[in-house]
Image (tube, rainbow, N blue to C red; front, top):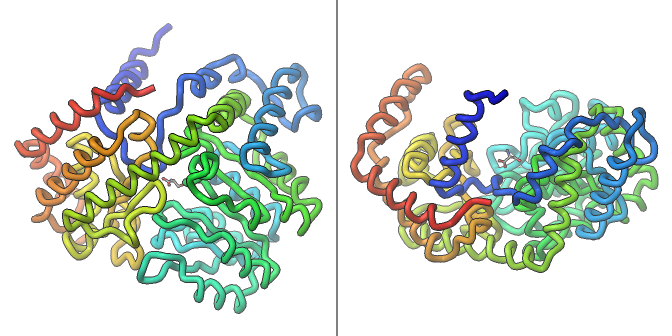
Length: 436
Ligand code: DSN
């Protein structure tokens, strides 16, 4: 029996994805081979436990799938241990806390408005409710402020230190971070969710020689299904020979129940794809496209955080050009022309994460579709035009006035002839590049 309502929504979402250019840097298009296992009979199975040590029967093929996923991850990232069961990035990270800290212990991560992940100790996350979070920041150039990291680490002696971010445009200096973590005896966890695909393809340095633990999601630059992994490095096993056992115990039974075996099978295919020579070319192109798009924006007077882009993403700071809290106008207007981005906080944010002063954009998904310099130029120049159109709009100071003001803004953008023309142009470009 077909559920017409949901089927229709799937059709609409497919159309949306096909007719626009996806520029949210944490999104991507998984291949058909990655998507197939998600609707395979593995979706029907329970398999709490680990390969050859399950709490359910009938797991002989699930065991093989999980072992293959583990072996592929170990080989690709050059680590001695991996857990492929985390449902996604947040449980993966929370398991690291369970494995390395006691409730109340001090942890350090990058402040969320500076680009940090929620689960690195942001104040409303469980990671800040159960652990004492000391955030560090970026400096005026948008780089991690290592002087501050040193100072805070010496003062607070954290048990766990995170590096990695959700909105950081520079290469991570894992070595420098490790020096600090080692000096204060902290576990050093590198969250490579955003750059995992770049690392797998050789377009970004790996944290493996420096960190004790590496976590990642599997659905961003790695181009897999939604999922997560936790890796322990040789350095991690040297610090704590039981670390891998502790990680396994933290995931199951500590935090999760039965693994999503269909997801594990899909992750295995993802890792197979990421090990192919073509993935090296893909990851290099993501960075090339990102640097080029950043250069187009900069050339046209758009204010970018830091150098622009050294990886797959860039952050537009609208504070000086448009005003505080105007990210929402840029996101909504760009949506209407078919360029999907997300409003985002910028370093030194003077507004809030819900009404931030920037937008974040990146190139992993567009690059998967085969887009290159020509399309990045069109996307960049369209962004510049849209940013001109939204110049008159300012976020109302009064919280209660904002909803209606934004609703009226969207209505007026929907009628705007220039927005309509740009929409047609973007659709024409997008339709030349099929989605997998
Ligand atoms: N929500 C994720 C992102 O978009 O970057 C954080 O991992």
